[in-house]
Length: 71
Image 1 (cartoon, rainbow, N blue to C red):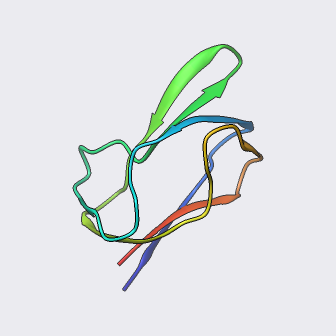
Image 2: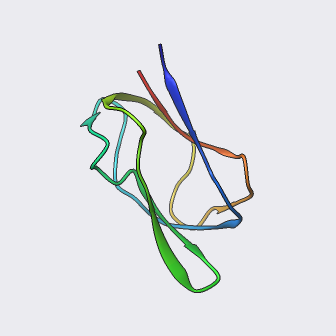
C-alpha cells in the first residue's frame, strides 16, 4: 500500500532530498519547506521506496498538495 505525503501548510519548497527509487525511513527528510520564515522538514510516516516526486525546489504549495508518493 502506498503512502501519499501531502503538504500540511502553505509554503515553498526549498529543497527536495529524494528521487524516485530512493529507499526512505521515517527519520529521513523528503523535502524542506519554508513557511512564515521557518524551515520545516517533511518526513514520511513509514518507510518504503519513493515512487513519485511531485514537487521541485522553488514550487509554492498549499495545504493538501501532493508532494511525494512512497510504495
